[in-house]
Amino acid sequence: MVEQHGKTLVPQIRFAGFTDPWEQRKLGEFGSVAMCKRIYKEQTSEQGDVPFFKIGTFGANPDAFISNELFEDFKCIYPYPTPGTLLISAAGSIGRVVEYQGEKAYFQDSNIVWLEHDHRLNDAFLKPLYSRIEWGLEGSTIKRLYNKDLLSAEVTVPGSREQKGIGQFFAKLDNLITLHQRKYDKLCVLKKSMLDKMFPKGGSLYPEIRFAGFTDPWEQRKLGELFEEHSEKDRDDLPALTIIQGGGTVHRDESKRNLQFDRSSLSNYKVVDTGDFIVHLRSFEGGLEKATCYGLVSPAYHIFRGKNVDSDFYYLYFRSKRFIDVDLKPHVYGIRDGRSIDIEGMKTIFIPWTNLAEQRQIGAFFDRLNSLITLHQRKLELLRNIKKSMLDKMFV
Image (cartoon, rainbow, N blue to C red; front, side, top):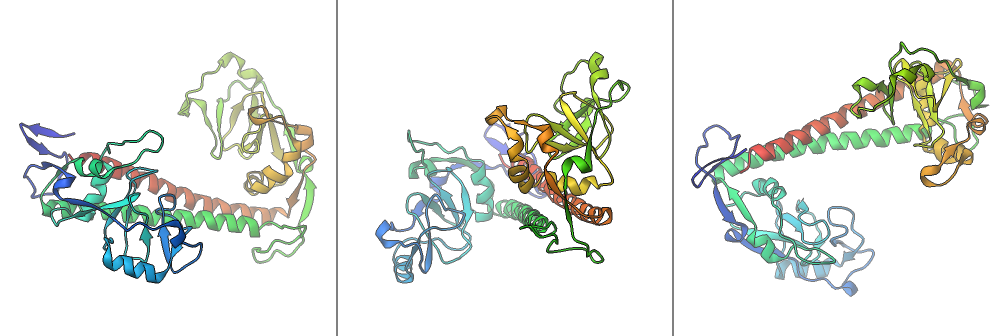
């Protein structure tokens, strides 16, 4: 990863035009540790003018406030971060970094600190650099980052121009990650909201939101009336499948789990077709998954095939909190890992029903929404992997 010729340290990847070796330094050579003035409990309140962030709420929502008068006094007299300053958690999750954006807020002394450095360090470069430091931690019960630990941390840094280029690169990468995280979060919130509004609730027969052209009342029908149990065997010519919670089915030969099974017993396995529901007596996330390919599953599973229903529509409902925590719960027995589903009892559960055309519209809508969620999730994973790789290759 790093080329070292005598005392010369060079990262694997560099921007064009930079050839000078990086230099090893201690953070203390660049400045000193700073922190806000101590705030005592009696100076805080549950409501107030200025958020006061403690180590437990650092980077999240505050649960304490101080007066604006106290804030202005302390801000003028004692150390206070400037916009762009990287605040570091010195207790709890050691080394967690939050960039101060200039908002009106105050921070818990000694638990939230920052490096008050000179201009030889670029803050945008310092942020990814911090993530690579293995802090020397002390303390038995509660580990913390002491000032001496931060100041004695060894780092390897390039010149100011190269710092700026690296900092801008990672800032853009972080912005992309944040953008896709926000889109992902918004889509998840939208899905939750639409699931709540596109299914009737509170005894109503009409959902709050419907596609145009659908006006008939919904009905409640027994699960066993809409889905019949299916148990076809003696098809050892079909591939064995692995069930992935929330991900349907895949061929066992293609599964990362690399599950071993006796191929001579495949004649006892049950046939599932795309859209069938697979139920295990053991209750995992409600115990239901939807087949996404044709093949065989273990005889330990129960197979339910719908009659004139849309499987995407009912998959939404079967994985909903309402079905798992309310409808199915009376038919789950046992404790903890020993819980099982009473299949005959499950068949008596009343579930919502509307005509097939509306089912398909709703199912297709959420299928598209799920695809968007998956797309942003994959982009997030890709960007995080790129960042991890670049942190390894662009730093010494």
